[in-house]
Each structure stands twice: as C-alpha cells, then as structure tokens.
Amino acid sequence: MSKYMIPANLAVSDTGFLFMPSTGETFTLNEIGRDIFKLLQTGLTEDEVVSSICEKYDCDASTCRKDLDDFLGQLKNYSLLSEL
Amino acid sequence: MSELKRYERPIINKQYSGFMNKFGTSPITTPKTEIDGIAVNHLVEQFGSPLFVMSERRIRENQRNAYRIFKTRYPKVQFAWSYKTNYLDAVCSVFHSENSWAEVVSEFEYDKARRLGIKGDNIIFNGPDKSREALVKAIRNKSKIHIDHFDELYLIIEITEQIQMKAEVAIRINMDVGVYPKWDRFGFNYENGEAWQAIKRIMANKNLKLVGLHTHIGTYMMSAEAYRIAATNMALLTRSIRDEYKHLLQYIDMGGGFASNNTLIGQYLPAEQVVPSLEQFADAISSGLFSLSFSAEDLPLLILETGRALVDDAGYLITSVLANKRLSGGKRALIIDAGVNILFTSFWYKHKISPAQECGVYQEEAAIYGPLCMNIDCVRESITLPSLKQGDKLIIEHVGAYDMTQWMQFITLRPNVVMVMEDKSTELIRKAETLEYIIERENLPAKFQKK
Image (cartoon, rainbow over all chains, first blue to last red; front, side, top):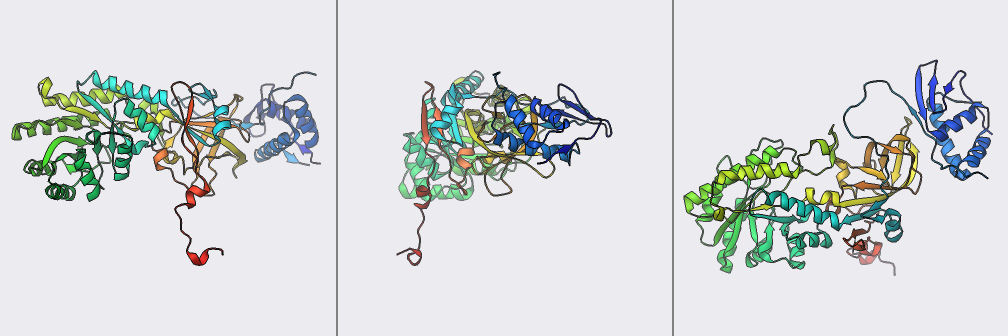
C-alpha cells in the first residue's frame, strides 16, 4: 500500500494556498485538494485517504480513488510528493 | 450522522506571477442548466447526447430585431434567409413565417425552398454552380437569378431563346472595400468595369430583365465601414443604370456577412467587445444608399441575406463528458461526445462553453477533445472550466450557423436536432442517423455478398 512523503516545511493554509519555501513556488488547492494534502502530510496511506474523504464528502470509493490517482500524479509532477 | 459535503475532483493549480490580463471576460462559473426554460437533463433523457437544440423564440427575436433596425433606417427592406447557414426545414420555416424570402446557392437548396412552398419569385438564386436544368427551373418560376460569371450569363441567354421566356436577373458584383482578403472570386468586378460590361450585355438583350444588383463583400465582417463603401458603390451603379438606360432597378441586395457574437480563434478580445452591432451595419448601409438621391417611390428594395448573425445564438450543442485525463505536461484534458465533425465551427471559433449542472467555483485550465480517433479532433485547445466528472454535461453556445450544414458523418452518427418551440414544447426536427440510414446508399458487389 503506497505511502507518500511530502517535503518538509511546506505550508498549506486553511483556504488552500500552498507555499514551497525552497523554490518560492505557490499553488492553490480546492477544498478537497487541501483536505487530501493535509491527510497525506499526516502520513496516511492511499486507502486511508480514500476512506477519510468518503466519510466527509458525498462520493463513492471508486470515484475518489480514480481522482486521487490523478491528484497524486499532479503533486508528483510539481515535486510536492514522493513515493516511499 | 452529519450531512455529507458536495464532492468535486481535487484540484491543484500552480500560480504564475506576471501582469494580470485586464482584457477578456471572466471565466464561466454559472452553470447553464436550461435552454429556453427546458431543463438540459430532461432534453438529454428524451433525445440523447450529443444533442443540437434550436430556439424558435431566439430566431424570431433576432429576425424581428434585425428587420426593425434596418426598417427604421431605410424604408424598403426585405430579408432573404440564407439556406446554406442552416437549411433544416424547421429553421427555414421559422424564418419564412417571419416573411423572409429564400436565398439559395445550389439546385438542392432551390428544391428545398420550393418544397417548403416558397414562391419562385421569392427565391434568390446565387452561387457559381447553376446547371442548365436548374436555370430552366428558375426562369420558369420567375426566380431572381444572380449571375456569377459571363459563361452563366451566356447560358441564360441561350436558354431564354430556347424556351422563349424572359429571365429576371441581377449580377453579383465584387469590389475593393478596404478589407482583406478581397473577395473577387464571385461575380463581376466593379473597379475594372467588368460589372458595367455585364450590365450593358444584359440591357441589350430582350430576353433578360435586369431587376437588381447584388454584392456580398465577405464573411464574419468586423468592419461596418466596408458596408458603407459597398452600399455607396451599389448606389452609384444603380444611378448610372437609371441615367444611362432610364431603367429603375427593383432592388439592391447587400448580401450577408455580418459577424456574430462568437470569438474567433486568435482574437484577443471577446467578440462582444469588437464585433459591430447590427445597428452599426445598418447605419453604414443606409448611409451608403443615400448616394442614390432617388425620390422615395423610386428607391429600390434593400435585400439582406443575413445568416450567421440571425441564427448563430439560436443554436446550442449539449454534450457529455466521456473522460478526464492528463496530458504529458500535466494539463487537464476533457474528452466529450461531440467531435469536430459535428462542430465544424470549432476550427475557427472559441465558443462559449458552460457546464450544465451545479459545479464548484474552483477552475482549472483544460483542453477539450472530441470522441473521434483523430488528432485534429480538438474542440478547444485551452479553456478554464470547473471540475467535471464523467457524464457531466456541457453546453456549447452559438452553434446555430453552419454547424448543421457543414457537419459530416464520420466514424460515428450525427445526433438528433430538436427545436424548443415558443410554447416551450420540444420538437424533434432532425432524427439521429442510424447504421441503416448510412448503408442505404451503398451497394456491395455481388461477389462480396454472403450467400
């Protein structure tokens, strides 16, 4: 089961504004994106993230997993995430 | 248990520093959930997706508005519906019920207009391709034949001698109105005297009656001034014919070409900020026609063949999201069930595209591709849209002009077309194609047929 590492000192605000001090890059996340990012920061696995999101939002696990895959790809693309 | 929150796909957008774009329109955040009061979901349930939807109400409003605008500036005005813009029977019939004549450019369109009960003398027959049979038909029906070239002129002379009938003709005139590209492939040139030569030839023939002059200076014209120049030239020529031959023309046909509110690909500002209004076009044409200096009773009828500007915003295309995917650089791409084969105008327009259901306010840049297995099937290279999932609906607006005549059957079948009527009922005005419809015209040689 995949676990991910997020670079240290990345800051994400409650409104979904993300700042990477090492490069000065900034990003914005929608509400679910922000929630997922914070869950990943706590070290949850993919399955745990999906369960957690489905408890809070009106979606099925399959849709959530599909969208999570895409989102993780985006985070990796921006070097905001690496697989352990 | 607490109520679950509305779900949408997680999105992350990288922020780029730089100057803000102070031009253009804001991204679309308001969904368009209905067309003329009919819910999009209801339309899709009943007629499927993709689905073209025409609005009877909007067509009538556009036509009445255009007539009022021109009629308040010039006393004698007649519109002729440009069949090539959209020749679905129902669409043509709405225009005809608003007193529009028919403007056709082929024998097929001519026959279509006659089928709809349009009187021969209310049909303007344009175009470079008129067969002998089509010309005979038009002469017998007293239709207004707009001659495109000398070969056609001489063919008409030959036919009138053969069938011993007079033909009512006009000539199409091309001219330099200061815009690029110059449309000089149709008709007779004004500046080099070719048009006057054609007029002299017609006036000298007892079987030909010169009833009007026609010009059509271009398409999607973004300069009203060009129409003023064209109308002035037409007026001067009309006056010369009166002075030289003591002959009053029945009409001046200024053609069409007014731009609609669709933004062109590569155009920096949105169409609503740069396209002249119909009032501006009407001002330009009527001021040009003042050069006639005729008495009120001698003024020729002003004919307009406006197509795009009257029907574009009366057409919608409902389409469904088939898939979301990422391009190699991370850009989002949407695949929808409507391709460029039914949305031909996406090659030159940036259509307004709105989600048809409630959606989040967070937006992401995306490319929109059609379902065809062809690289050219790109409906939009880049657009900012909210999160959409498989099955969500989009509405592509301003597709009433040319999409339903230039579309082609390719790989898949062309969809239903419905019209939302003024009383809010819906009518199927063109059935979706079937495999049987496509293969009906084919013939399989006997040796390939299975015994």
